[in-house]
Length: 327
Ligand code: MN
Image (cartoon, rainbow, N blue to C red; front, top):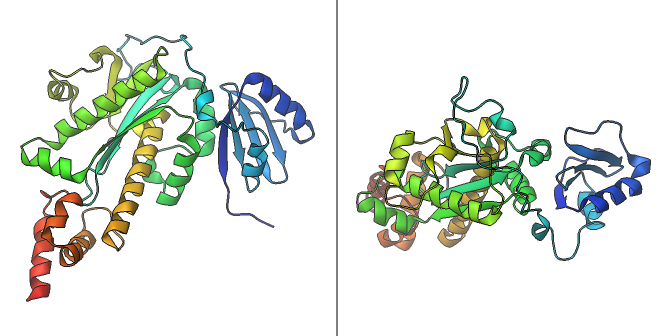
């Protein structure tokens, strides 16, 4: 029978344990091992792929049961190997074509991306994530790619599989704070610069003394503007930071960051929906006007600043709808 519900579990294990697994699964080994792989095995209910980075990927209907044989009770996140001083921040910034150094997509990179800037409801979430070059093969296999090509269900599935194994930092700018700083005249560009910068600094702290080969930000302003926004702030040295539009397609670190940022955003909207008592829509189309009108009718106009980005044109449209409904 076909099984359409495919789960994913990722463990981080010591190499001697991985070699023990290879022995354990020797009846099920498959010939083809992926790039960066130690072995691949296929049992009736689970595909197991072990990588040199220590990550072991379990895919299939029995993946949880199979992974359970190997996971220690204290979880996997603590087992992420850190402290490898192999790479130092690269200084080369000359590039062919895209403005990035040749071979950049195979570097160990911190990538950052944001979600929610165009959504009337909900916060801005920014994530910076560190992807080591040895992690690229299993991340590809698990389906990490541009989050715009993934539906919410897939985003949640992948985010759950990577959140305990990929070092990352999440910054959430909640609506009340957003409205406050926006009302005081801060541009979205400046907010984003702050959030990206903070997320990146946090990840650098998390992975220290290991250092990435480079940092890639999904570009939302000109590089010079970004650093102008950060004047007077503790920021990452300019020579280590790269900017690119559509960066999710350039390095998996940005793709992973965009997935984790969207996962956080989805969760936040779920919480908001619960608080509102009805399903909160995403985006900035007419459906959010209707939802905001409903919210005002239910909870009063004062409830709005905790839910939406007030300066959007949607606020006025919602108020007009409420007026129409009441008269
Ligand atoms: Mn982006």
